[in-house]
Every structure is written in structure tokens, then in C-alpha cells.
Image (cartoon, rainbow, N blue to C red; front, side, top):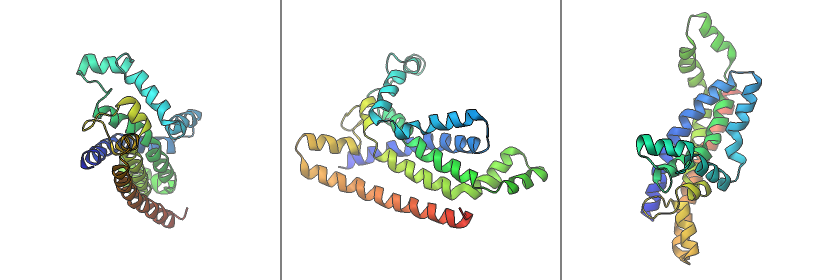
Length: 222
């Protein structure tokens, strides 16, 4: 039980770094743009939320597989193969969890009073300073709620991970895949325990995310 749990936590943490950085940055950028391309990019960023995980896994295989454009480049330049590796599991979890970080981050930045940011510009604060000293401190609760949701989603990722990383015990077999394998092998007791563990962890994190979102709405009046 502990090996897939530790691997799942490792994959989810690494995936959260990727989806967290990119999701918050894109959320901030799109919250400040009114160009029509922003709507197109928003749709593309949200797409992993609605596509079946197996479809996402297939796309990742096409791009990062041994014959994919980025897959060949990673193999030739860095000697890195994402297929059947824990790094591939991280990539799959990051892609799947990205919209759950991006959407709350964008909403949190849009809720920031634009007059406060304009006052900072009048006082001579640069755009980077406004983002770090005004926008981010005011939006951090919404961002943190999104990060928690992204972590929970990455922790429970199954379809895309199985497509790209496979199920190798001790290497790519995360908790969700271990539950699937246990059911397939008729080990119902092990499946029950693993399901209760991941359900308990997700329930606590979801409660924390809900509390953060409610507190953020109370503070911003939205």
C-alpha cells in the first residue's frame, strides 16, 4: 500500500509545480487581456478538463512518444524517455490538473480591484511589482484553492497516466492504478484499503479547498 501511495504523492507534488506555475501565470495574463485570442487560449487551457483522460493520454503519446516530435527531441538531446517512466506520470497528471489551477487563478485575478493596480502604476510601480505586490497578495486565497484542487486531481489521475506511463509496480503504478490492478486480480481487500486511503486524503483536501473558496468570496464580496 505504501509504495503506490508514496509514488502518487511524489507524482502529484511534481505535477503541481508544473501546473501551478503555468496555471497561475496564464491565469494572470488572460485575466488582463480582452483580445479575442484570449478566449481561444482560455478554451484550449480548459480543454483537458472536458476531454476523456484516455484521449489526453493518446495525445501525449503522439507528442511525447518515441516517434513524437518532442519525444524524439527529449530522447536525442537529453536521453529522456517519458513513456513507461514516472516522469511521464508527472506530465500526464500535470496536464489533467492544469485547468483546475488555471480557472480559479484567473477568476481570483479578475476579482482584484483594478483601481488598486492603477494606483500602483500612478505611484510608479512596474507591472512586475504590481503583480507581485498587489495582485498576487489579493488573489492568493483563490489561487491556493485552485492549487489544492489541482493536487487532488493529480493524486487521483488514472487514464492519461496509464496510457503514457503504464503500470509498472514501484515505478509508475500510482494509487489509482494499484486499485484497478487489485480489482482485476480479485484482491478486493487490498482494493478497499487503497480506495479508503485515497478517498480520505481527497476528502480532507477538498474540504480545505471549499473553505478557502468560501473565505475568498466573503473577503472579495463576490
